[in-house]
Structure formats: structure tokens, C-alpha cells
Length: 362
Image 1: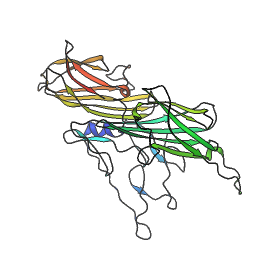
Image 2: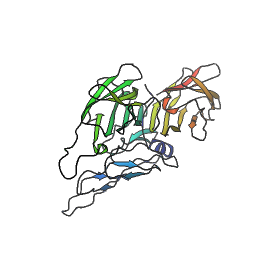
Image 3: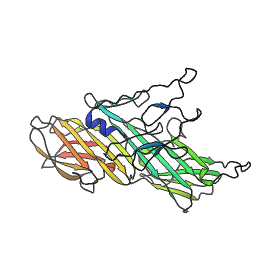
Image 4: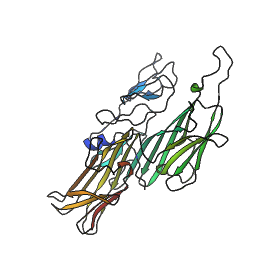
């Protein structure tokens, strides 16, 4: 299983255990009926313009969500100055899991994913896709990749927006980390508005498209495609000329949440869970790997390893409990610089003889 998953508010909720209950009210229109529920960044309904769809969310330099006039991609999972994730608009990722009760993550809202039981696993990943134009033109492309894994069942979506492309049909393809051949995700059309009228021809940057692959309303992903495994993307014209490429092997802007139960070693009967919370902005990653377990020998020192490499020691408490918190921070953490939380696939705890006490896989 790949270790790439999302949950923009997971770190806050899991750290504090504070329930988040969305509240929605409706303003009354002149006729007594509520306006369409266009939702702002705070979750409060607003009515845009003369009743049309709301302006898409945009992200300011400070990371605070604001609403732009028109156009632009959906908001990425930015992290505010204090390190707290914020999400704006209704176009963002699905509500992230958070801890409730005995520690099982649940999803807010009435239309979210099913709750994850104490023995289940959940992973969520959001990546803001940075496309690079191969020809150096003024055309642009942006994207948001979202992927979830609920108890081993993967799903996801890819939203792509372009500006400045000429009329024609364009194809989006992907290469996964398990293959070398590109796999076609689908195609979209660009239609240039007419040039008649007093306004003259449209400016190239005003010609925009928005296409979604996967998800309940998008172009279906190819059968068997795991959205977590997408390593690169490309957009080509009708002559098979590649216009844009994107490398997803290193997350520059995104968020990850993962939770999985631990597997007890043969010499003990341990129970618990391991979690990853990670956020990336401009290539800088912050977050933590957290392991909570019980049923271990008390006051015993073990070594923990990530992806098979020993990192440091951890000691159980007087009641046989273990709490491991390994952090990655821009200004220094307890994890070495060689560890990227977005690429963690396993964590193990072993004794001096190499016997595995507990493990978890993401």
C-alpha cells in the first residue's frame, strides 16, 4: 500500500480530540426561500452575484483563503503561519478524519466517507499538481489530486484547469510508480469563443477549461488505476505533442493523513494504532509519525525503525504503554533529514536481538 493520503484537519483533531461539527444556516431571499447554498471558506452559505455559481476559491500569499472574481484552480491544502491547516471553499478535499471516543477516526458532514472502526485503516492524500509547460508558452495548467484508501479500497479524483490553450482536443495521461508506460486518463476539448461583436477576439488567457477525472461526477479512471500510485502526469495535444508535465514523486504542496492498526509481535500481545500527519508547502514538510500501543512489558527500551532503517530508541511506560511521536519540522525535528513523512511505508519496533515487538504498514 502506498503511503500517500489526506486529511487537512486531521492533525488538529487527532492532537486535540476536539469534535468538529459543521453548522449551516440559510439566509432568506425576498420570496422567503433560501438562496442556493453556495458555501464560503467558513462554511456559511453565501449568495454570489445574481444567483449564479459562487466564485472559485483562491489562495492568498499568507495561506488565508479568499474568493477571487473568476477562474483559477480549487484551493490547495495550505498551512497557516502557526502550522494549522486551513481549507476554503466547497471545491476543496472531502472532510478529513479526526479522532473521537476511543480513537477511531470519523468523518464530519452528512455525505462523507463511512466511519473507520478501531480495527480499520484510513489514508487520505491531497496534492496540488504543479504542471510545467514544455514549450515555455504563456499557457498554464494546474491540478488537484485527491486519493483515499478506506480499509484497503482506493478511490480518488484529479481536477485539471487550463488557460490559454488553442481550440482542440487534449489528452491527459499518467505514469504510475509500478509501470513505465503512460496510461490515458481521458481527454477534454477547448473551444474558442467567437470573434464577432464589439468586444473583439477573446484574450488567450481568458480561454479556460476545467476537467475532472475520477470521483462520482468525473471521467472514470481506467479500471485498476490506483490514484496513490500516480507518479507523473502529462497533457498532450491532438498531434501527441506533450505540452505539460508534472512530477508527483515529491510532494511540494499537499497534505497527508494515515491511520492503521498495529500488528503485534509474537512475543507480546500489543494493541494500538499508528498515524501519520504531514503537510507540505513549497517543498517544506512538517508533521509527525505517532504510534500508541499498550500491552507491552513496562519500562522497557526498544528501537524503532522507519522503512527498515533504525531511527532511535523509545521506552515503554510503567503500565506497559508506548507512545512514540517522531516529528519532521522545517526548523528541526526528531526525525533525520533523510526521512520524508510522505514516503513512509512502514514503522517497526524491535528489541536488541532484532525481534519485532510491533509493526504498522501504510
